[in-house]
Amino acid sequence: MSRTVEFCAALLVLLLLSGTTHARSSDRNQPMDINANSSDCSSLGANANCVLTGNVTIDQGSLHVKSAKAVLQQANGKPSRSLLSGGVSLQQEMDDGDHLDATAANLDYDMKNETMVFTGNVVIRQSRGSINGERVVYNLKTGQLQSGGDGGGRVKMRILPKDTEAPPAQGNAKGMP
Image (cartoon, rainbow, N blue to C red; front, side):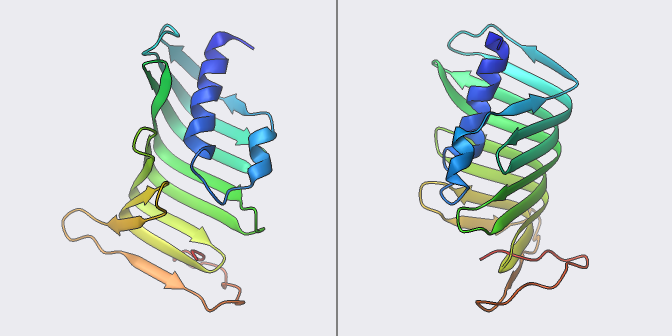
């Protein structure tokens, strides 16, 4: 494996798995496959950057991520930030067997502050409910979820009773606990 691919894989592992407390834990032990039409990575020193463009896909176990572009940043030798853009979709199976399905225009993961910021037509679904909005911030340390929109944007949530399966989505999302 080339140093560039190793660098990208290390950043993406931290981006997608380090703080996801309920994600399928066995996924961390699976190989990660990263594909893109092109990559442009700076030196692999302490402050490296790597840009992947064109049909970016990341697969590791039950985790599947797609975006048009991924910018991976490293500061002082540690992964610090990952920016996914151009339409982001993320699907993963949880340890409890539930499925997470998230889409947004962009995803900004700040590894130092352990926050994920989804922006632009955000839809996050699980079997028991959903949340939709223009901006959703997930704090991986505390589990706090904040949502809202610029200019008075609305937040929509649907929470289903326990032991109820959500009906198929028709323009609205299903699923968030």
